[in-house]
Length: 218
Image 1: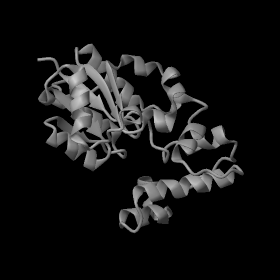
Image 2 (image 1 turned 180 degrees about the vertical axis):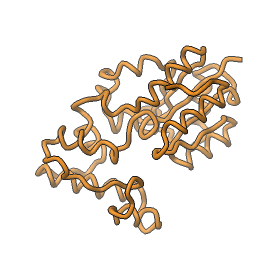
Image 3 (image 1 turned 30 degrees about the vertical axis):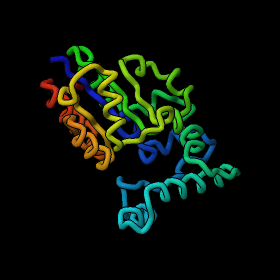
Image 4 (image 1 turned 45 degrees about the vertical axis):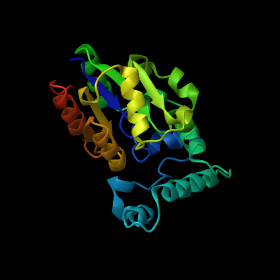
């Protein structure tokens, strides 16, 4: 039976914005050390993140606050998160990609697995030009992006569209996402799942490869 590895993009294939402050500062022309909020990597220094974890604000509220904050730092008014992402990640595309992701993708491909990206906002947040500048994208057989379909995870139609294009059974797919609601959506759609831990990317990819019957990739 042909198997498939289905990956979310932001946070799973790419490093989070928390992890790439130095790259963001360089791309935006900000002095090193300007961006100090670290979210899950150092909650004690990020009161806004603590508010989100306590459900006092939503995740979208958090990122819109950071977007506006960074926009003001560069002397602009930003009202869309995609402005922040595209401006902060435009300088060195490859530098924001997790090496653990590259190793796992190559291992799955070499083992004959099909590969898919299932994202809610790949082109919306990163811009279509990002794809063209990232050779890793060429490794994927299928890309389903709600930027264009308008169907967001965890809507069951998003998973069905991806599985259908892959041409495999749902149970043959291992789906990896850093958002628990999307992981649960994948489970309801019949996919095997891994809830990606941004604090432990290697362990998360090891778990995904293990479900595919493959050894860890380094």
